[in-house]
Structures are given as structure tokens and as C-alpha cells.
Length: 149
Image 1 (cartoon, rainbow, N blue to C red):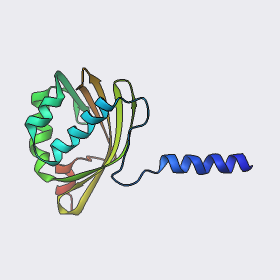
Image 2: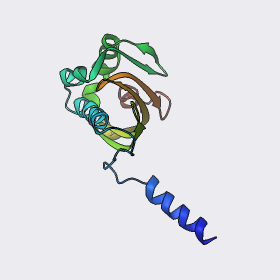
Image 3: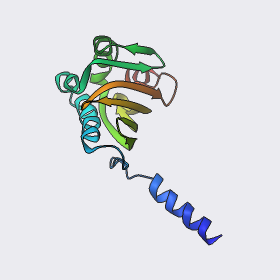
């Protein structure tokens, strides 16, 4: 019984991160963790050039609304309608191994709304080869939540 309580207490301390202080779990290279952090920083600073430099030439994006779209379609359909609505990301968890990283975040958008999503990054050669977004709620992206009443 004592062991069970200790294991639960240990699990709770590992699972509950400090807000905004997500650190990568062991197994994810420092280089890939930095790519992930730079990715979100580019969104926060509205810097497409910085973001594009992180994306592989054959980058694809997938979400409940998008099926392996190209970098150009990602810029037109995801970046342009959403980037100006973003206030900041609060990265909750960054976990991964080798060339895979999962990020759980809370995104603060205009009008005091929030979005909670999980994204899976597939890396290759220090760049994002593929990104898959799992929406935390129906239409959980900035343009959708800002337009909700």
C-alpha cells in the first residue's frame, strides 16, 4: 500500500508541469526540442520566414480539416487566417524520442479565448517533415474560436 501511494505521488509530480515551463522528456534531442520551440515562437512573433526555415521542402500538415497539405497550402489555409489572432502559446508538455515529438499546449487567442491541442512533429535533418494537429475540441483553432460567441 505504501508503495502504491508513493508511485501515485511520484506520477503526479511527473505528469503536472509548471505552466509555460515544459521541458522535453529524455529521448528527444536538444536540436529537435529547439526546432519545436522555434516553431511556436515564429507563430507568436508572426514571422513566416522563421517558420518556413524550420519546415522541410516536402513538409505536410494534417488535421481534422486538412489531409497532408503542402507547405504552400499550410501558409494560405492555416497561417494567414490564424497568425494575427494569436497572443501566445503555453507549452504544457513536450515529449518524444528520436525524430518524433508530441506537444500539448494551451493557445491564448484574441478576445480572451483559448485553444487546447496536441501536435505531433515528425523531424528529419533538423526540420519539420510532417505536423499532425489533434484538436482539443471541435474546430479548435484560432479563427474558429474567435468567431464563436
